[in-house]
Amino acid sequence: MVRFVLNAVGSVLLSVAVVFAVADIARSLADDAWRMTPVGEILLAIGVTTGARADMASPSSIDLLGLSSAWPASMTLAAAAFLVLFLGRSRDRTRRSLTR
Image (cartoon, rainbow, N blue to C red; front, side, top):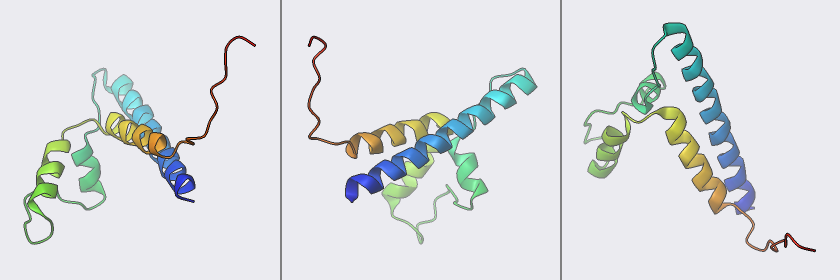
């Protein structure tokens, strides 16, 4: 059950990363300039502030949000997706030999 949830979350994260990558590519082609959507812009769009609000969150989470707010969203989500998919992989797979 845990592997199913991890694989589902990883798949959703990967699909969202692909959507942001396609949007970044389309915007870059339309503007004739390379521009990637930062994580902070997405967080502000959904209502999460990245500023220092000590009454709402711990100092370490505020520092993490401040640090990651400038990272490209598509690459950050893809890295998180692959990490979650890696954690949800099946451990009892048998290795298949190339020679039979």
